[in-house]
Image (tube, rainbow, N blue to C red; front, side):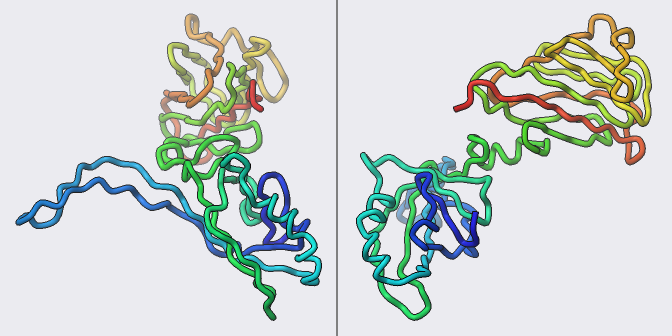
Length: 274
């Protein structure tokens, strides 16, 4: 995306030589309040019901061109910024192109000729108020729940102690993962997802193990040698991820700071997306 460009309804503002101020960042929408004032009582009764209102994003917009061009494109711009049947459109800003909102223009817009190129202001109303990344609404609960770092179709997390690895399968169908265990793999390392678990009984340092659920194989990363004989009997399940939030519990002894940390990479292609 170009500098200060925004995309609304899959159409870039650069088509009309329009840009916006992207230095204003929308952090949190206004929180809804459910309170009751009681005569003679200090403060209010707070019912403690959570929730947020709609998010309003306001941006100054600028035009870089001849104003006759702006007038000539008047109808096309009206159609671009309108919401047919009141349906929201995807809104993306250049300073964070992996994130989008579902938004509607919610206030009247007037364009004016100015010396500095600023022609007006646009207000979008986002409902729900959260941004989306890869189709997942970035609610406070979702953000705090996630522990793994996403890179394309991979999720990565480093462990210096037992814990859990959390991410989201954004597909609508079951996903078949490839799990890579790297660096320090202590004997007895166990992974648990739902009712399934997997355990490796041999200590390994400075190499890796690849658990391929699609092919139902367990191999060494460095040479591809079969490692099934080192998988604990009765703990040889392969994982298949249901749609939604995924939690993998990691149980091990002997983990610590480098060089004793364990790196886990989970790779899968979401199914049934789009």
